[in-house]
Length: 70
Image (cartoon, rainbow, N blue to C red; front, side, top):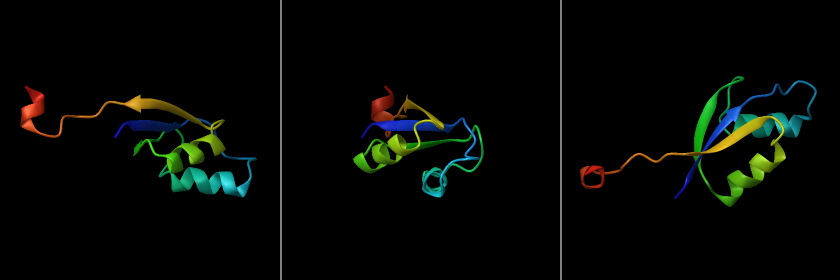
């Protein structure tokens, strides 16, 4: 499944409590912190809610076995 790298780039000061909770639920702890999540409809909905505070890009998936590395 594709992965997304999510980086928190704008302060949550002045924004509503549900948006603050969404940032925390994504696993973001401080400004410029980045996390990787699978690209699911649930995560996409959360990202839309706080799109003005984050930066999203595709994350490269590392190979899962030695056979794929060759």
